[in-house]
Amino acid sequence: MQMSFAPQRSFRVAFAAVLLAVVLALPATAADVKRVVSPGGIEAWLVEDDSNPLISVEIGFRGGAVLDPDGKEGTAAMTAALLDEGAGELDSVTFQEELNDRSISLRFSAGQDRFGGSLQFLTRERDRAFELLRLALSEPRFEEEAVERIRGQMQASARRRAQDPGSIAWNALGRLVQGEHPYGRSASGTESTLAAITPDDMRAFVKGAIARDRLFVGVAGDITAEELGPLLDKAFGDLPATGGATVIPETSPRSEGGLAIIERPVPQSVAVMAQPGIKRDDPDYYTAFALNYVLGGGSFASRLMQEVREERGLAYSVYSALSPRDEGGLIVASVATRNDGVAESIDIMREEWSRFAEEGPTAEELADAKTFLTGSFPLRLDSLRGIARMLLGMQMEDLGIDYIDRRNGYIEAITLEDAKRVAKRLFDDSQLSIVVVGQPEGLTATLEAPSGS
Image (cartoon, rainbow, N blue to C red):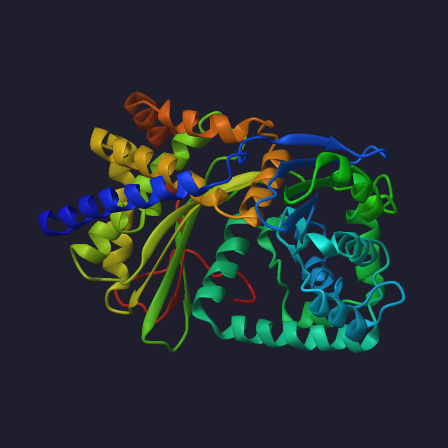
């Protein structure tokens, strides 16, 4: 313990110096967020920065893979992959060529609760960039050639995931913990569900999910509020005012605990685990965030890493994380190690989980966590894209327009008493559902693996 502790302290001192340099180099207007409302009533949050002729736009819509039809999981993800594959009068090749020729980056993505887009471009290209964004959102073509090409790529990825122990474990854990709730399904889809998706399914997804009433926009860069307003109407004015129904029930994740084993002929087992957690709007969220850093989110500074890797050399990587989804959060953890070491690794993790609930962090652990979490926050604002993403998240999580100024105060306000109370409230090793994929030695399953594993 002592030998590994000193280098960590030295690292933190060095890292603090790097953070200070980064903070000093950040745009002076990083926290000067402006609320822009277009003539047509479309809202965006903006940070102006004319130091370089660049603009970054991040957009988000509430509702992602949770809206996929049953049996057609992957619809949102496949739609995201195809929106920039031809739109309006531009076929796939022409659309992509124009993006490349103008050095415009346009990408879409789909998570469980969100459908998003990311647009970066030079200032001189802003009118055309917003027009291409409009076309992609309002007039996607879903041409047969592009659909089948993207489908083939996604099915190839699905086949690889179906053989990957980590992917198998996480997918099985989702089904085990979430049951029939949409959170228990694969956002990326499987080979068979991807095969079932039609262009009409994707058009229906666009019509239902991509609408102004669930749109959020963050912008950073070389553009003024006066210039941005009309461009918002240009990009999003053609979208329907309201989308389809997005009533997703709250989930009650499995809390009974237990262990499922999925046999696979591999030399190393992957173990993943989850218990009910915390939502983003919970008053204890920031305390839970700091606690997770101490337990398993702080890399080499975390208890799990110290006990599993540094002290016993059982695994290269072990971690925990908060998963605060809209309709119900989880606390998750994972370790990968040789088959004859997985049982001991799980035992150690459960012991640390239990000890953490009983005792909470030490004063020094909490102080170190607060130092790191407040000091590293500016790194999320070290680029225009990072700032635009932050502005988007601030809106979608209803954090307030002055969140950048207030955020570190939430972390600094955490007391040791708070931390111990929340640790006792949240962490319960008896609630951990565990899935192991491999040929683990010394483990006995107490749960049947979900069907399809």
